[in-house]
Image (cartoon, rainbow, N blue to C red; front, side):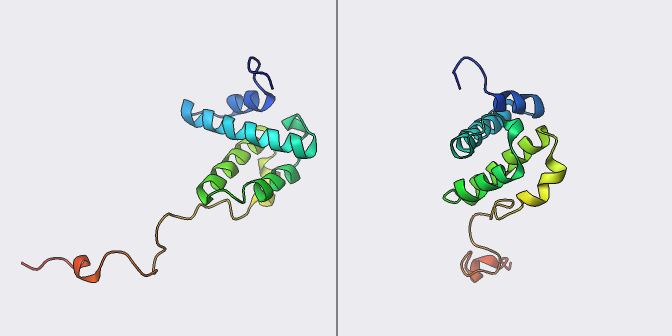
Length: 125
C-alpha cells in the first residue's frame, strides 16, 4: 500500500459505508488492519478473494487480546466488508462468536457492589 493511492479495502469501504466521516474513517482503519493481517497470513491481497474462513480466522486469532468493545468494533467492520462484497447473508451465521456483543462496563446485574442500601432508599419527609 502506498500513501498516495488508496488501498482496495479503502475504496470498497468508502463506497459501501454511508454515514459520518469519523465512523467511515474508523471502519477504513480497521479494514486496513484486517487486510494487512489476512495478507500476511493467507497471502491474499484483494478483499474480493476473501472467504468467510479468512474473516473467521481474523476474529478468532487476531482479536483475542483486545477488549470486548474493540472486538465488537472489528466484528462490525467485518460485517461491513461482507456486506460490501455482497456476501453478508451467507457469511453471517459463520461470523457469530463472542465478539458480536460487547459486555457492558461495570458490574453485571445482580452482582455485589454498587450503591449502598441506605442511599438507594428515597428520603422520607
